[in-house]
Image (cartoon, rainbow, N blue to C red; front, side, top):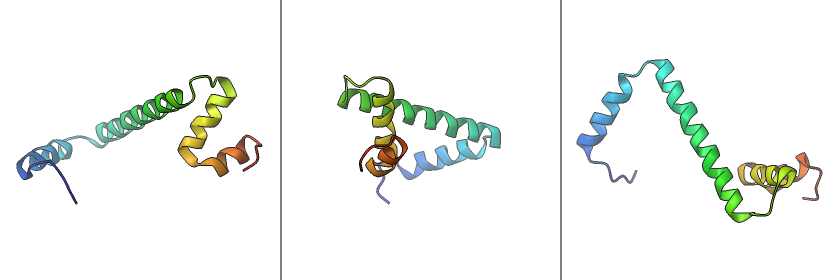
Length: 78
């Protein structure tokens, strides 16, 4: 695996993660998911600035899961 992290920095990071409680780890994951969703929605907004409401949500679903599933969910031609 390619990395720009030094072995020492990786050990420090791994030790910090190991000190977290399971609840703290879950909280971190949930925050990462939230940030990822925000970034995805911002990207859709940049690519489809005029989309609103259902069209915007369709484009979000399409970005997440692909055209075929989004079309099925929204009753559009694939």
